Length: 125
Image 1 (spheres, rainbow, N blue to C red):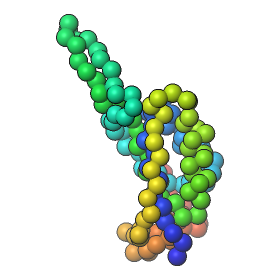
Image 2 (cartoon, rainbow, N blue to C red; image 1 turned 135 degrees about the horizontal axis):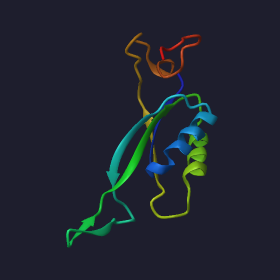
Image 3 (cartoon, rainbow, N blue to C red; image 1 turned 90 degrees about the horizontal axis):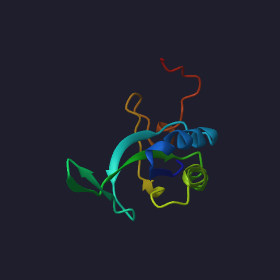
């Protein structure tokens, strides 16, 4: 069984399509995308609403979760950096975790085979 890794990428929402294309180009076939809010070095900003100033310290981001075994982790990281890097504060972060196991619920397959595309399976549209 090959090692499995989970890669979490947190970045600007407007960069999601570029990231999806970059992952498709390196043959990453699955991902989970979540809309999240966060703060880091940007610390947010202030806005005025009805004459009152509010501190907006949680900014909208997207979190993309990818689990890989066939595509090298370094390839995913480099493709993500190329797609997402603007050089501005707020480009995001990438986190890498080892995965102990994965289970495909439908078949009960475990390990690396559980996250690979089954050959010849046509998924419903």
